[in-house]
Image (cartoon, rainbow, N blue to C red; front, side, top):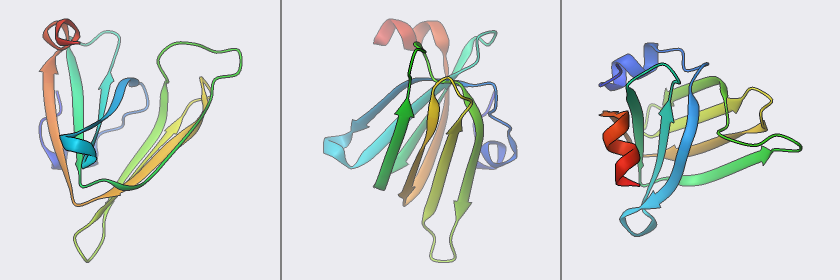
Length: 116
């Protein structure tokens, strides 16, 4: 279970799937929720004051939750973050953004799904 930014930076999220992406707080924060099929937890990432959002997804004949191949989270000397998500061909594409802070939360999967 990932609960801190340090754990997120050390984690390999290659087997995670994106289950939701949404704007919150009146469009200031961007939220990505990830899950692993065998886990009882979901990983909720809140990107505070998100800017420069770019989402490229080409599902083609595919359907369902996008599977992550690789992620990176880099903090600049100025203190802002750049996050990148590359997908594993199901679908092809990626997601990138910049933000002021990344909030990491692990939530019980069953409780999260019921809240949707």
